Length: 88
Image 1 (cartoon, rainbow, N blue to C red):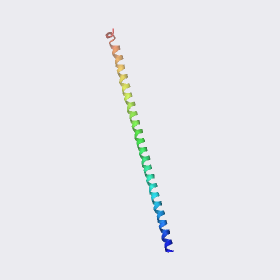
Image 2: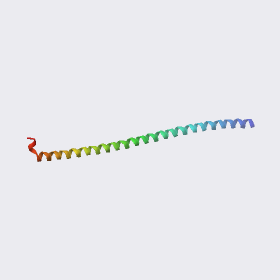
Image 3: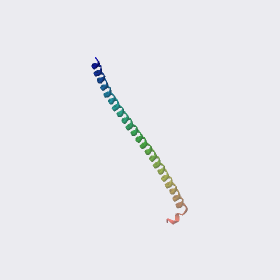
Image 4: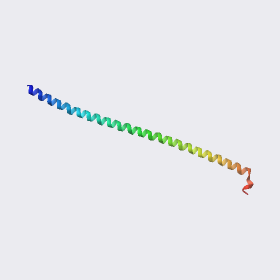
């Protein structure tokens, strides 16, 4: 009876060790997957924010160029109106 109990104990212990290894491996896979997904979300967010920032910068730059060109055009019109004889 004692030998049977020892065999049962060894069998049960080996099953627990296998189960622990599987739980450990599963935890590792879950942890790495979570890390990878979090990293991908972070990089995606960073890229979106960069895109918004660059788009805003470019739009502001275009507005600035448009304003400069409009002011230059007004100034040119005033010059033409004030001194039309220079062109003739």
